[in-house]
Image (tube, rainbow, N blue to C red; front, top):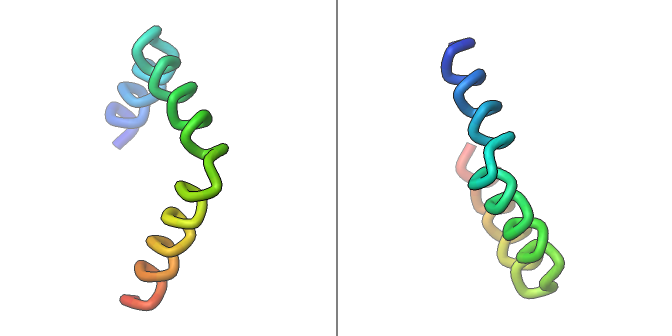
Length: 48
């Protein structure tokens, strides 16, 4: 499992990973996207 986590960490530090992180942050600022994420989290919680 440590190998997988290292690969994820390395990706997030790469230029493409940083670009994806910045895009996710921009999308998180949109109130509609925040509401969608909140609803998805609620659905996941109900299933358990």
